[in-house]
Image (cartoon, rainbow, N blue to C red; front, side, top):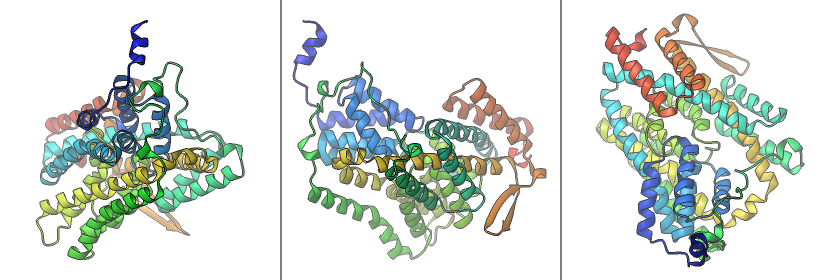
Length: 467
């Protein structure tokens, strides 16, 4: 009998809670590169290396997480942690997945708030903006290739872009409308809406569920129990919203309360990943609340791109700066820390509710063709949403002044061509050539553009934003 047969004949070993926690910390520390990179890290460690979960079950869990609002990579960690070690396992897996990014973004936000206007630091972030703009354009193309299957889907993407860019329709309304169109198309069995796929079927060489720690059977604690699911979700709902209520009682309608309410609303409409919602967050943070200046959202996204954890952690930077600039009676730095922490809390807490409430019923959800069609339509609309993000960022990176045209519901923001920032345009073009022609990776691209910004400052002695 060969070694592989012997291994399969042995009983599956147990995985202690402490060992699982150490591995989740390792996964979190390596989770760079957005959801695709994070999911790849989890697959390599959990499926191929540790054999805690099989290929089919991993894809099954991932497909469910793709249906949910919020960061699918963190939700996948919660799901697998919950399967392995009940509620405590899910809580720890989800928290550890976010913790490194939370600490990194908090530290970078403090440095940015205190020293962001210092010449060399400003130049570093100037270079970072050009790279992030190119990364967002790459996201448009990547998501578009996956989601735009046929003319109706292309039409949905175009309509989403026009609605957001030209008419300033709210992001949640765009997403809900696309989902409704897809749901109706799915119910009517229209071919264009029946292409919703998850992440495919496992390959023949994949790790079989039976050969893993979790095996093929559903654990007893993961089986349907409506009372248990509802009671746990009710506790999590209170924990999610309690800090927002506390801010309302203590600070009235101040910045912290606004931050809590806004990001709580955002947490339930973040379909399609971080890039899809960032234009909505950026526009609201800049134009409605005045928490950020236009280019600063790109600075925050650059921080999130170069630190581990979900990209949506960039919202923590937004909450930090919003509270820092509107501190009320407390010190700006304390207000910023509270604002950043509150933002992350209300952004990530709902992920536990979606998993603990819905995961036991995932089979019935995955077989609902109309629901999958709604997801396909949302995916198509997300392409238009991310394109809006790229255009909005591009205008504010490349030009210093905008003109807004208002007419018959139209609210179109156009650049003053004479205000082109030549240094920014040159660096953005160089970043695009590096990314698309020479296939430079995200991290080297970000680091290289940041270094170029600092070099420009050192050679000219002037802020690059002034040229």
